[in-house]
Amino acid sequence: MTTQSPQRPDRWQAPDAAPYEREDDELTQAVWQALGDQHEEEASFAAEVQARIDAHQKELRTTPAFATRAASFLPPFLLPKALLPLAGSTGQKAGASFWTGWLSLPVLALATFVFSGIAWVRFIAASRNHGPQQSDLRSYQLEIADWWRANLVKALVMIAAVLLLLFYAPIDALVLGLGLSTLALFGILTRLGASGFATRREVGTVAYQFLSFAVYIGWQFSVSRGLGAEVQVGHIWVMPILAFAAAICIGLARGQRRTWILAGVAATALTSLHLLIFTPVLGGPRFGERPLEVEKVIARLEDPQQGQRFQNPVDWGPYANAYRMWEASGRPMKPWLGLRAGMRSTMEAQVARSEFNSLYAWPMLELGELTAEDVPKLRNPYKWEHQFDKKYFYHSRSDDIQLRLRAMVESWTPQQAAHLAANIQRRLDPQSQYRNLRDYRLAGQSLDLLGFSKAADALAPTVHQLLRDTYQTTPKGKQACFQSYPTEEGGKPFREPVTDRLTFVSMDSTAEALLAMQRWGIPDGLALLPVERYLEEMTLVYDPQDPPDHAVLAAACRDWLRAVLPQRPVDAEPVPTPHPWDWWLDRRLLLATLLLAAGGIWSTSRAPRHTDGWPSESRA
Image (cartoon, rainbow, N blue to C red; front, side, top):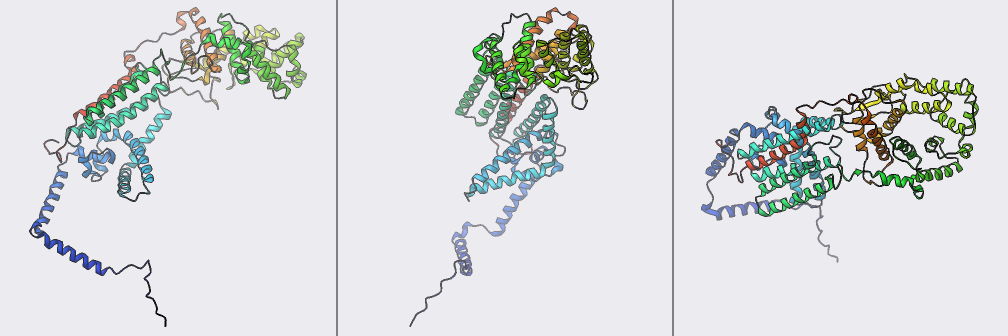
């Protein structure tokens, strides 16, 4: 006889909850009876709770308007503890007339965006811990989400405005906007602290955080010389001032000797490192950049053992123009055997593989590296056969190169020379939007080679007008360069640069303009001192002994200009009239930094060390 074992309940089956409910009721009654006289009557207890609720609501009703408006704008991670009961209790209407809140919204939106990302990363990192930490982070995320829902439209408008300023306005406008926004935030914190709604620790911590971010921005200004802005008086002191202001704020906030010492040491270390790098004597006016060493660069170009450094054909043109510039400036020049060795080895190797671009033969011709023996390797049979045809269209550069090569091994009749000269003049269209100074310079050399120097001289008025059309200056006229063409793509006029700095992109076209001035002279009234300042800045490099080709070209052009400028009449260089505001404008970045640092320190010092509960109406 088999006995059947009792069936075990399924593991998923829930137990009967009735016994547990009865046990809970019995335990509650037992605890209640054991306390005896220690618990109050239900009516009196409810009355006391209601009284506290009424008192708190009265406090909310008597809260100053600026506090409720501040609570509607400040994100949860910046909200003082005294204003936490007001978070989310006021609508957008309460903050609509809070103009300081609107001014502070750009930095608040950017800060909230950053903190939202940090909170999300921390939440993901803590997702494996199903404990109170994850719950707190989730609650924090929800609070930030509530702030975004209440201020999304306004925040997006402000962020869009910041991005527009960043891409389509001078950098000063962006700095001014963010600076005013930060000062508005400091103003809100100052009033909250003075009214007892925020402690010195809360206000000082916020000021320290925002000033620390400003320290990073100040560092970037020094690295990039103002992110495209002009160099201003005192710009090197921006980062040190902000660093010490942040140290003072955190010291006032914590009020501990150890904090003061650590903050002071950190600010001093940052300042020392900053000044060590950016002082012009030690590190140059830009991060790690110094003027190139002309003598050492030329010595390397002259050294025949350095040919492997100059095997890139793209660099040959700037080097050839630099040689001509230094030669025209009166500097005694030796053959650049190092450059010519690199040219020769590269050309021979590429010609053997039928890969050499004949356009790179032009700088070799300029430096005298090519001879009659090289002509068969570089001649273009089609051009040589049809160059004297009546319907042949003369092309710039390629035909100029073939003409120079042909002159080494052949001669032409006066009729052939006249035909070529007519073709060269025909291809120069003074109305073309793509006319450029290089084409005119090469055409002038070809006309001189053909014996038509008077025809080349006759190009002077057109070249002078093209120099004026391609001349581009910064808004304040401190720097100037020459563009490749008088108009942009599509025939539109060039847009005036929005910054007071120009880049190396215009270096080649500027050199072509100066070479054209050597042939046809300098137009009247064309200011060249701004061009000299532009060229001087282009000579700043990271490795002064091995600079890029554009920096070598800039140094050669600068030396030629310095040889020419003293010979020009005084009236040819317009002297700018100083404006009374120039002193302040040249120091605007330094003054804004001092104002921002003072605002953070002032708002921190005005806040009390402690707040005794909810601020009374008299204190507010």
